[in-house]
Length: 85
Image (tube, rainbow, N blue to C red; front, side, top):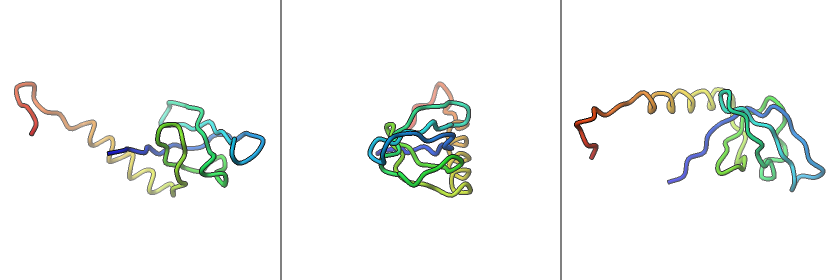
């Protein structure tokens, strides 16, 4: 199973669509991401990113729902003496 994480595009640069790059903020962690698959992305947009590539643009509300789900998953804990499954 693959997981794509939403991030907010801060800047876009590149000479042509195949080589577009963007600085994307993942809740304080900023990474340089390929925007080759989403050349229409612009600063302020939210994109779903998998292995360094923005796969699609998502609405801000959808990105927030994903952030909330990921936070809830992170808060789930299994006691040390229990083995999941």
